[in-house]
Image (cartoon, rainbow, N blue to C red; front, side, top):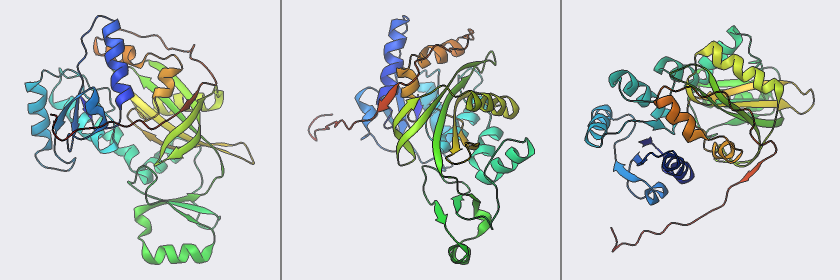
Length: 310
């Protein structure tokens, strides 16, 4: 069952197709606020509750029991906390996600920054005197609420309207953005794949044009962060490479599949096979022969739901 997999049609199709190729009958469910979502084309939609609803966990547990669901995969940041709790409450359920403490650490940009400083992970400086600055909501996502501050006057105005404790303010770095798709086996503990890619065009915080690339420094840094933090299962890491100095800075991590992980799939990584092997507690050696310079470009495709058809 996907948690918040509304637009993840390609991902659902990948699991169905690869599952069948391996002789498994994969059925996808997706837990959503309403049934009118694109993934309904290939999945059974479970109309659900909001992530902060007090009845959410009991409801999801009933859904899991009633439908004999064996694997739960979160696709939104708040859903990672739910998935982590399910992992504890239903030991026989397979949930490829980090534990709740790790999820909460990286959901807070301020806490994540402090963790990086403590573990000597390179991050842009938290220096309010070095302009331009970027202010990010502590628990924001999808690039919402981000403000660029170019000088002292703009900073002063920003501070007059916002509580600085609700934001991570850092030096604004202009350069190349990278994402790393990674997976660390929950049952064995080894890294199964680690694929960097350049973010060429972004919409709503998600890559709509991206290219795989071999980047030794980012790969090495990703391994260090994964091992030091205890991240498990699906992992998406973000980096910036300074356009002037060439320095690489870690920006954030989402302990879940990223929206553009389909790029890594297109580059030859059988993500469904990795997850299903992990579910079966079978070891998958690290996949390193993925295709470099594979370009992924998103396109629109319409799905129609007729009022008189159910």
